[in-house]
Image (cartoon, rainbow, N blue to C red; front, side, top):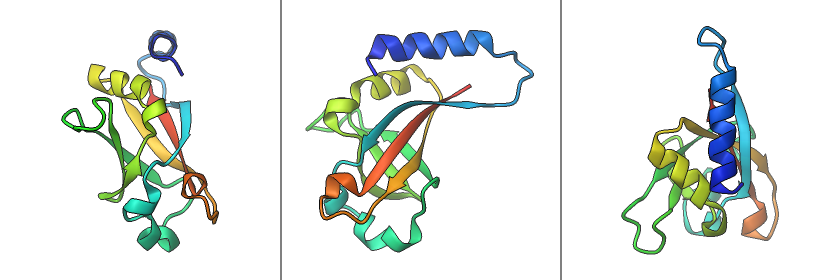
Length: 124
């Protein structure tokens, strides 16, 4: 989702939600996990489940990508949001927008780009 569209969606939803309403999350982005084959995903595969919470961590000092967003499961690095898809999420995280993520899909696929899908949410 383009940064302006994501920001507009966040603002519109925040304004439409009464302060006393129950917290809700809106899916704003889905992406494959980049780097699955290089980090702990293989080792932790049998423990992970679809729907598990993921932590998104901004790496503003990443020398390869100034918009890098690291993906962790239970404190262990699994990989990154793909560089082609991370700018809008990184921008919102830098603004302090409450961003969360979950495992959207797990698939035993020989292609590491198709093994884990990260679903990114904006909390309201």
